[in-house]
Image (cartoon, rainbow, N blue to C red; front, side, top):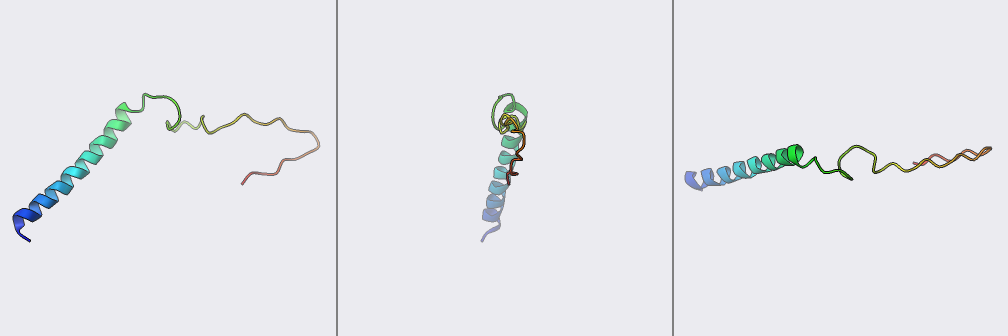
Length: 62
């Protein structure tokens, strides 16, 4: 393989990696303004606690 072709292939990989990093950075800085699921706050996955019945103990959920 010629040196010029190798340089072009490596340059393409470097450009793809830089684009990936820039996209991830952009989404982190400017994409986090949306609220709702996927924000990482943990509120979406929680449910209302069930009322405890006296005299019974619920089984732990695994």
